[in-house]
Length: 130
Image (cartoon, rainbow, N blue to C red; front, side, top):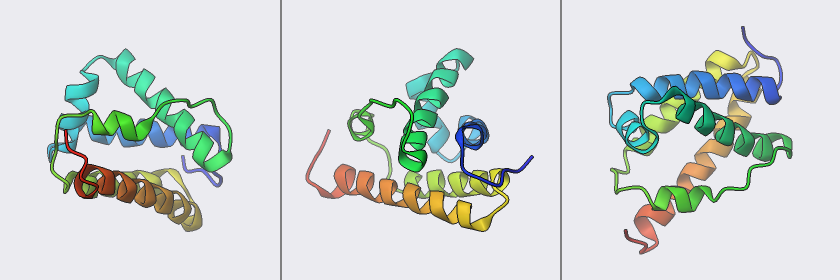
């Protein structure tokens, strides 16, 4: 089922589809996530709920996300920059499966691209090293 609007339900569906793809990814992104989160379904559910809250805050101006996403990524073991492109490709693929309206896909994807650019800058260009 595709959604016509960005709301809590469609964001939750996006998390399920996206992280379903991430967990089985064989291009390196899956390893980063699986090494951090593990294989426990409950741990993944917690992660999806937390990131759903993050996106609700970003897209709907609600939710109770209180983490520090940049800090969490800076604390990961180093990983190749190209993984951001794989992450974004899987995210875009997931968006197209969730949203009927191309405008919603573009709107959310642009936010994700901006976040990815900021993270890449901090991880690879700012002089911050692990």
